[in-house]
Length: 330
Ligand code: NAD
Image (cartoon, rainbow, N blue to C red; front, side, top):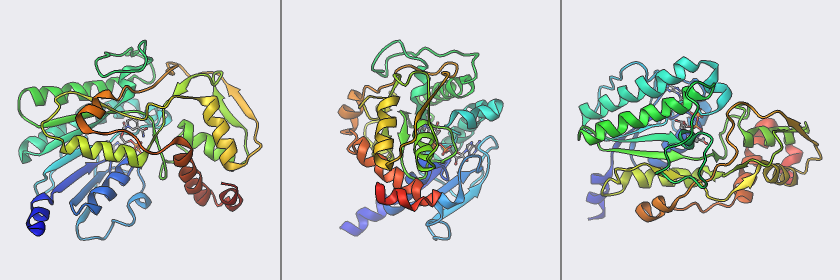
């Protein structure tokens, strides 16, 4: 009985962007559930070390490819998670046209693959589609406040266009699409040099450099630990019936950047001073998800408190950085 149920639930799952921070944790969780996992990645920001334990396993396949080129896998897939896109501002701004192409043409290519295979599809969208929000917290019905000509637009507008494609394929009954609007997520395997706030502050603290804060540090963010986020993505992919609506996934706990810096200093034991720098253009002032929809539809809410998740992250970065003394301080 149990055996036949397991066989029925075993799927072939494509994770685009599977060698990245979130994608590698997702690949691992799917693999642990017994699914065949195909990771497609162009290694723009992903790293093979992130998926090292999976490489060489018979139920794991790695394809190095840019999703801007149509995919021919040679085997059908049941589910497609589209996480392919650099998520950190310095990385996605380095080649903004490629970022827009990844979001629009890449998503279109994956949707077409889903049509051919009759696969279910989950799009990793982002809280950035709300821009610098005028509503707080951000509910999914809010249309956002995005500058379509600024340096962040390749990502923000690219992701908005990707959502448009997803909902058009859904309305046309071509693909069973689900859209997750992911808020700031952190944890082990974040790229230490990617310029995001958590990795910046932790690395600066570990290396005893000044902690750089943009603006006055009173702007707020919410921080979701990676295992909570992956749990939300899996629930959204598997929930019946299809919500047919975007779903915010993030941790509603709201912290100022100064709060975060204080916690990082405490967990690393650093005495590094704080250094204030000018706020970058279009940087949002406040960001906090309204997760009522995720709670109601998926029974999901984050479990890992910031202190606990940050400690795991500090330990991971300390190992990378070889700053062994910090490990004991943490
Ligand atoms: P990441 O940069 O670590 O991972 C992105 C992965 O996609 C990398 O492995 C990269 O090499 C790959 N990639 C990029 N462009 C590609 C292309 N054209 N073809 C194939 N592969 C490509 O970022 P992440 O933090 O793991 O984010 C994953 C997804 O989740 C992204 O789509 C991002 O927009 C979304 N997201 C993340 C966060 C967050 O806080 N981490 C927040 C909101 C949304």
